[in-house]
Image (cartoon, rainbow, N blue to C red; front, side):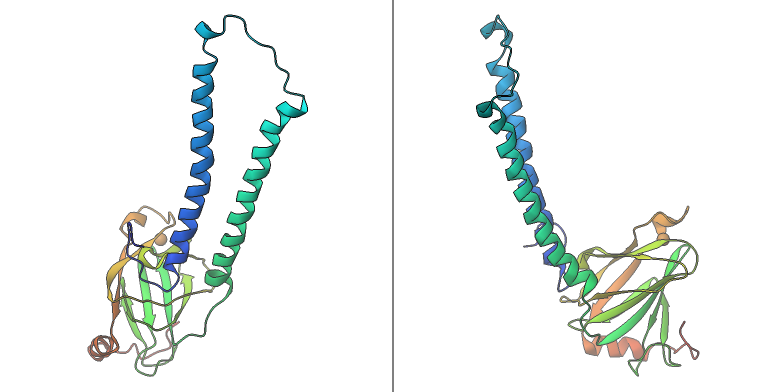
Length: 226
Ligand SMILES: [Cu+2]
């Protein structure tokens, strides 16, 4: 189901379904409570109720109107938590084995990418470095070694539903598997200074042939990629 933004990674739909689940459960209780508030406003209007009733709300048949919805909301919470943990585990805790690995380094204010090059291994002399342009092959599983050269950044590919902080002095590994070819936005989603808003990059999801043709036009960096 693609209502707003393309779903271009293997796990993108899981994030969308989780958001829809939270919206449906939260929305149900929101509109139910609003409906009851407006109904009470009308039912207990002054013209129909010249003398106010005094209800303490302590009797059993009165407290159940609070406690039963309360339990029902708790059940909804547990349902959300179960699904959220399942999705979190699949995207953040568990990493499928990589077909290829990319390094992404946040700078004020650009993304620097290191591709593994023809040998498919990162940190070798044939690595390909790019600025604000990332090339990947559709259907391959990628690990992204994320770091920052200066301040906190956050690597975000909206069509992948991927967002992961880049932290100075630390290397965080994220993963994704593109399922659609195309060209999309890469953003920085953490305020990282005056140029944060222009820290946009592009990701190109290509077929193996397109990727190899692009690779052939690039010069390797000739040193270790770190
Ligand atoms: Cu940034």
